Length: 113
Image 1 (cartoon, helix red, strand yellow):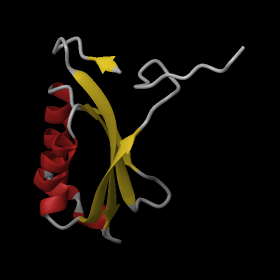
Image 2 (cartoon, rainbow, N blue to C red; image 1 turned 90 degrees about the vertical axis):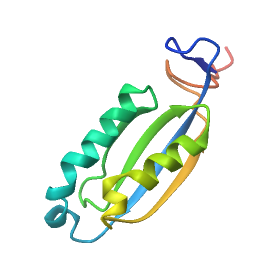
Image 3 (cartoon, helix red, strand yellow; image 1 turned 45 degrees about the horizontal axis):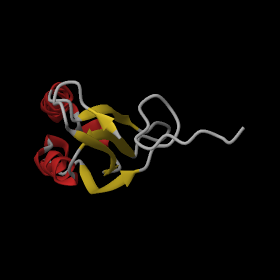
């Protein structure tokens, strides 16, 4: 498990937040993009959001990677996100992500030699 340097004793889990966008998101997002990015960067500064962005070709959704001890943090983020509250996101879901490979993996598993 990842222990936070900012919060000693804090055990993180990984979660992925999946967004499904309206068909015309690129035409409609301009007025909401600034507030959405402000919301996302604030979560990053709090140490919750690790990486986020839109899916490409086609731009029909987004994926946001969170590292936090509680799924409710991710659910609250989505419920308060200007993209969600403005109707640009038609559906969202949160999944716990069991990471096993990489420096940030929660449960690293090495191959047997």
